[in-house]
Amino acid sequence: MTALPDPNQNLQTLSIHSGRQVDPATGSVATPLYTSTTFERDPDGEFSRHFFYSRIDNPNRKSLEQCLADLEGGVEAVAFSTGMAASLAVFQALAPGDHVVLHRDLYFGVRELITGLFSRWGLEHSFVDMRNIEEVRQACRPQTRLLWLETPTNPLVEVVEIRPVAELARSLQIPLACENTFATPVLQRPLELGADLVVHALTKYLSGHSDALGGAVIFGRKSDLTDRIKVFQRVGGAVLSPFDCWIILRGLETLVPRVRLHCENARQVAEFLSTHPAVAVVHYPGLTNDPGHAIATRQMRDFGGMLSFEVRGGREEAFAMTSRLKLIVRATSLGGTHSLIEHRASIEGVFSRSPESLLRLSVGLEGAEDLIADLDQALRG
Ligand SMILES: *Cc1c(COP(=O)(O)O)cnc(C)c1O
Image (cartoon, rainbow, N blue to C red; front, side, top):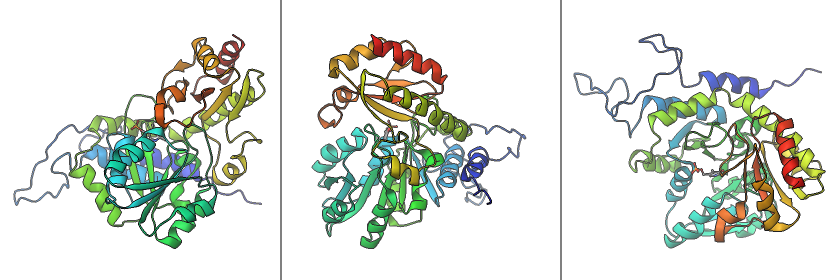
């Protein structure tokens, strides 16, 4: 039997080389940072070197977008100032009166956008359980212009099978957007599974060091949606700064080994928590008894670095436990080198679906044994 080629071999190469080259002017191996807002015209008024004003395009942004498109197997990527600005651009590309169907568990900021800002703007929506394809079919109307899902989800770590939703979307000629922030292209490539666009909060794993905000939309093929979304970047001005593009690209160079280690650490932490008497339930698709395990095994190359768990004793014990942690930091966000823990219900507010006993843990790159020892002493009280 011959081993299947490991697609991540190719991703490792792309994450280092795609969109970049040794600088022809100086021989610099590391990509220079181009802070100039404006670029020289040719004597005849043309721009043969492509760039003319940094809102429209910038060399660092062009490198990042090329690299992201290649990592996701897309034809084009558009980078934004944050993950939310990327989502905003996708919904703003629709029109008042249009309808969107979304998986019911998703990043709370997107829920806030849809139920708050965009309902005032006349965009209609339905939340359904996309793990049940009949629910998706029944929610679609003649005005439905977009399906939106995130998998694994934030914060309940639910796993949605992308392929059947993509097949339904294709049969109804409705584009499917898939948020790939938790999985990253190392673990799952939604465009290959039939999604039309991929949305990322680059702030998380792709950047990887909790020191840059960014977002991106990546397209499987060009359509009028591509052009409408690009307008919000180039004309609307929701651009990522050259420095943020540069630092995110630097983070991307180690994406594959980082994600592998996040997965390995999360697996050990999840196994430890799942046998701990102070823990009622662990949500992690790598555990064989997790409801998402079978789909994740088919769909993902590993199970990711994100998990959530419910402590016995509700909200009070959840707070007490985190107050005793010494290594794991109590902070929002995810996907960086530092392990971060957060009580989601208290920050998600009225839009929350998180139980009061739930803590979300972004398992970082510290030694797994140190993380487990810290959790153990905090759970013992
Ligand atoms: C963090 C996050 C976002 C928002 O990204 P920002 O850069 O904070 O705007 C969107 N979706 C998911 C799944 C996230 O984790």
